Image (cartoon, rainbow, N blue to C red; front, side, top):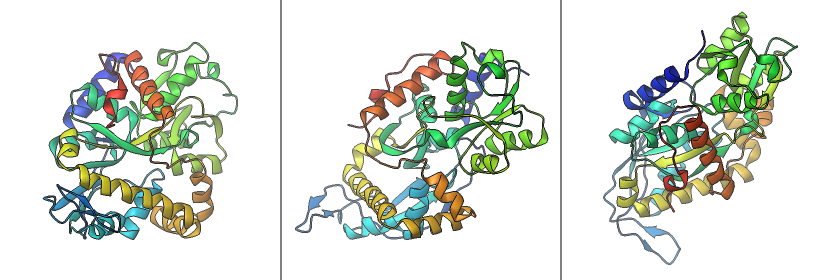
Length: 345
């Protein structure tokens, strides 16, 4: 059953209006952990260089916590209580709650409703779609880029090019980095989604369909992609040169305007997480392997595919514009978007 563009559009729009967002799965749940943290309305710099957030009115902070496909900063942050400790250093005890929401549409809805304050790892397609539907969403900084972690695998060794996919059945999640990868790959052979039988499935379901032989190829990422490789499936392509696979950290603009100093502390904590990862590589790999129930060798191999630099670069601006252009061209959004306006500067 071929996925018509109008169906694509309606599925995505309903997803954002009715639920909320990050990557490729569809179920969500929320859990809370509390701890100390600091924030303030009128932060001042002390002699030690720390902000004085003792007068902050922010007593509770809810952030998304998603570990898949390989969200190393999120895993390390929670394991080491980084945000809580960083806020505490700056004079304020804050209850930190974690919303374990894996669906991009569900994430953006939770942000819009105020159930979540910070989307700590949200896909570029989800940000653009939410913005296109009038949501108050702004990009605070970056979370990761990992084009090589997004792959198209097949059980058919004869599929070696985009042309070889003509008429084939391909499964994967609509409106994601993987979808963008597929569209860009087909374009290399002057093909579109209409030239294949594209079935909208989550990553786990797409992999199961590939295992069962009901699809010719599956779009997968992270540990699922690694497992596909280990099983000997044919790698048709990865996302290098096709998608930047940008993942960002996002907030509502009204929340940013009210808690700018607190968010500065949050971003300082982000930087300290990356520093920890860079200077404690072995311990980081062990923590991640345990959390994801993976072999350490697998984590090492996948980790090499990720760039967790939080700074927004010119390439990131271009990548987000590419995402928006892709979504407009495929009629996932009705109007073109200038994504530069989505960044807090």
